[in-house]
Image 1 (tube, rainbow, N blue to C red):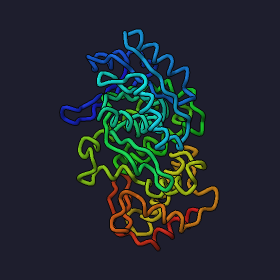
Image 2: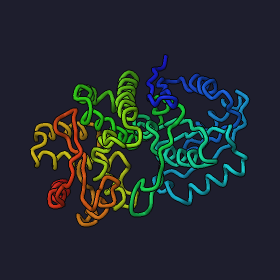
Image 3: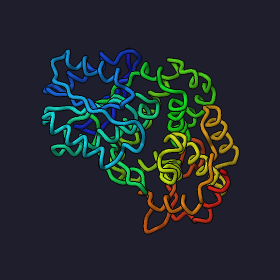
Image 4: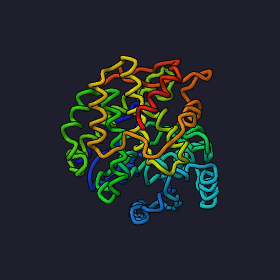
Amino acid sequence: MDSTVKVLLAERTYPIWIGSNELEEQLRKAIELFADWQHAVVIYDEHLNSAAKAISSALSHYGLRTSCITIPSGEKSKSVEKLSMIWEQMLECKADRKSVVVAVGGGVVGDLAGFAAGTYMRGVRFLQIPTTLLSMVDSSVGGKTGINLPASKNIIGAFWQPHAVCIDTHLLNTLPEREYNSGSAEIVKYGVILDAEFFSYLESHASGILNREPAVLKHMITRSCELKASVVSADERETTGLRAILNYGHTFGHAIEATTEYGTYLHGEAISIGMTMAGHLAAKRGLWTFEELTRQTALLKSLKLPVTLKEPIATSDLLNAMRSDKKTEHGQLQLILPSKLGNVALVKGVEESTVTNAIDSNR
């Protein structure tokens, strides 16, 4: 029996179905949800050919016309060129307003396919089928879509909510260890920013997380989705500032990704280092204790995530990349920093000397 989490957005409220070996049933529910669905455009990661074929076959079984578009793996696919390619192929396969874009893959495919869905014919419906831990707990929920420019991550994008999210934890079984572990960073983030009790649960179940124990997987994914859904429901488009808390560690992390040209670190790895830098800065400012920072660092390490840079990056390069962050105002850095486990705040006008110290402390 799967669990259902709802993202409450008035008439655009949508379900997140979470189960194991229940994808076919989830697809059946999606068919019922999209009553006039006639055509599926399945956009998938090149490494998920068999899964995409199975999903396409299941949709065909329900009488849908299906088209498939393959996306090369990796952050570099979140580009203007790949977006244009998707638009062209959607046009060629005669996608229309009764088509539904189905994203099968991790955050890269979800962001790219979601942006394509939100802009093709001024918006067609969108179904997320995340296949990585990171995309299950973070990027598939909340409607943020986008692509990168060489100097800045996710700088081009739009809000386009999925109409449903199908999470089948069984898909995690074949995920490579490094990529699976990378997703844990976003889960730790939820504990730090919103739920100290959940943080303690992660500390006591680190081995179960690493071993992909089904009960642990279901609980941590469900709780992560509940926490993100609560934030998105309250501040869908970042108008109140609440949703910004989800970016804890991301200003540092995105800068690390951009300065290494998206080729050295997986997203979760960069965010893990970014949370460590942000946590250090917060402790130095007296916002939370060094004991809490130590707990965060220990948990990240226990989940086999990096907390220091593994190759030199010039501090000036990281600062330049951070100045391109979407939270920067009038050239002044704004950071999400913890005040205690389970609570964070947006801190404005952070001095660059303090940021430099945080970066240099993590080498």
